[in-house]
Amino acid sequence: MADKAAPETDPAVKPEKRYPHPASPARSANMKGNKRANTKPELALRSALHALGYRYRKDFRIDLPLRRVRPDIAFTRRKIAVFVDGCFWHACPEHGSQPKNNEWYWSPKLAKNVERDRAADAALTQAGWTVIRLWEHVPVPDAVAAVVAALAPSAGTSMDDHAGIPAIDPPGAR
Image (cartoon, rainbow, N blue to C red; front, side):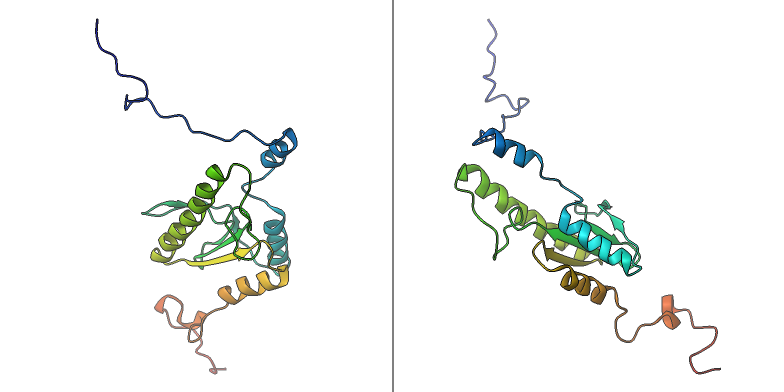
């Protein structure tokens, strides 16, 4: 009789992930309703930016050498990535809360979310992107101001010296 490896020792068999049982059907429905994209704070920010005339890509996949990243809002020409982070899912220091049920599951999960955020920030920065992270509780006018400030041309640059090409009519020539 041939010896067969036990399923838990066989490298071809992936271990099952242990998910906690929901505390109630209502909690289960609540968690299923959480969206990855198009959250209310994100929609409010996008709407305000669009009303000001800004155009952007939403939930745009950026394939970087180190990892794949999906900012909530991406200004691809300016290389600006905007993330609107939920207080619970990204462990906001002001409003984030540690769940009391299934703490063994949630603590490592939330820590991994924060770790993934930092890795995404580092990969984007290394690729020349500017990263803006906003908490969902930041008022929309403040969030818009932060994004607009990042989009403003930095001092000393203008369209006249864009890509090293001199302007056809230098300033003051008329």
